[in-house]
Amino acid sequence: MADELLIGSHVGLGGPDYYLGSVKEALSYGANTFMFYTGAPQNTYRKSLDDMKIPEGRALIKQAGIDESKIVVHCPYIINPANFSKPDLYALSIDVLVSELVRTAAFGAKMLVLHPGASVGQDREQCIVAIANAIDLALEGAHNDVKIALETMAGKGSEMGITFEEIKAIIDHSKYPSKLGVCFDTCHTHDAGYDLFDFDNVLKHFDEVIGLDKILVVHLNDSKNVRGAHKDRHENLGYGEIGFDILNKIAHHPAFKDVPKILETPYYNEKAPYKAEIAMLKEGKFIPSWRDFI
Ligand code: FE
Ligand code: FE
Ligand code: ZN
Image (cartoon, rainbow, N blue to C red; front, side, top):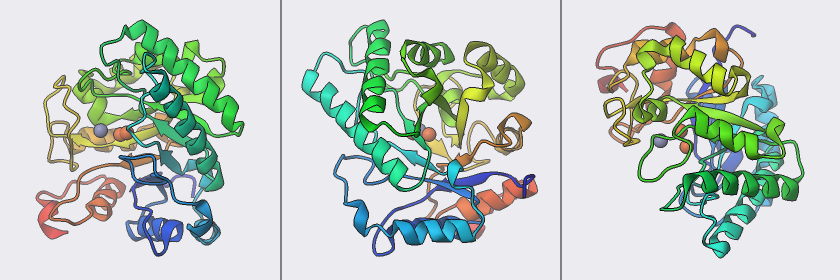
């Protein structure tokens, strides 16, 4: 179904069903793609892949007609490839990145989302070079066909990657630009100051700086904060400062036809909002107060 909206959400990877459970969770939301962390996002402890029901999950993916090449893995966010002045931490970030690239391939996925890191008081130009070098070493270490999608960041603290120009500079400093792409996060770009209400203009700017073909993933989130707030607090579709209409337009934008759109919106009353959010996006119609009905 080529015309079907390519949409999914973040899903878990917990026992007892592990990857089989991730796929089942995605299907229960009416999704045809999804994103997951191969372990806890906050740490680098990683369970052995042998016990994760990967063959069972991949069989269900095939049976459900999901395009495996559009499934997304997200790196743990504590690694900081920008922090070059702490050699031990920098080396650890590279090691973790190698292992995440290898794990991504083991799940049959092809895209790994990476936060570019934080400058933590170091010179930002030097950080850009450090990030590119770390990525190159990791790509050489893993030596597989997984691509890294650098995520556009909100600019919280000293985050790197808050402008398209900064992301482009990282790609340009890499020896392997064809293995690098971008994860366009709507909450983050809005919080970074981009005016999503003039989305075609934002895309035009992106195209001029980086090139639209570099967008591998879209993170579709509303934002709790006003444009330029640099906060990074996600909100459910239609409950934030971006609003449903713009997010719906982005989801259906022809430029993103083959790009997986991934919801990272918060749970509401401990319930996953994704089934309702995906249904509204498929219909292209907002249901006021939808959260009261999930
Ligand atoms: Fe992220
Ligand atoms: Fe994101
Ligand atoms: Zn975020």
